[in-house]
Amino acid sequence: MTTRRLSLIAAGLLSLAATAALASGSSAPFDQYQPDPALRTVPKTNLEGRVRHACAVVQARITNAPEASLERPCGCYAKQTMRSLDESEIEAYRATGYFNDSARAKALNALDSCKLQRPV
Image 1: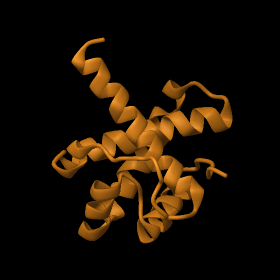
Image 2 (image 1 turned 60 degrees about the vertical axis):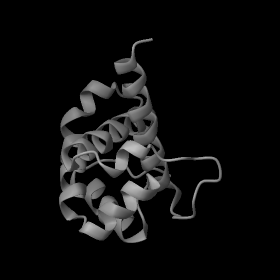
Image 3 (image 1 turned 90 degrees about the vertical axis):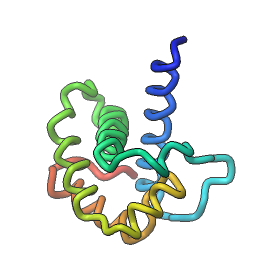
Image 4 (image 1 turned 120 degrees about the horizontal axis):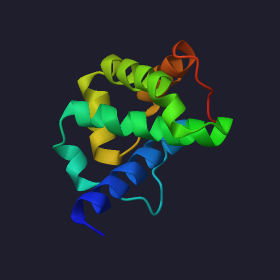
């Protein structure tokens, strides 16, 4: 595989883990999960893209819909979530790879606002 493809796969897995943390309802660290070190320096717009992609993956699984059909609502979710986070919440996400409790609450509000299903 090319380096670019591996990077995209890693980004997708990281985003999926972030959304899984959102769904879990707990900010307890994952025992075997190690966040991508690139999270610490990646621009905020890239973080939004990771959240958008994770949303599409999770929502597609929940609703049995194609990921492509979720581009607009997941874009809404990612944009609203990332804009609502304060710097400490963004830094916590960068450090851990998942949303902390206060960020999770904002993300759940964004799911509702963008008419997406909450993960169980």
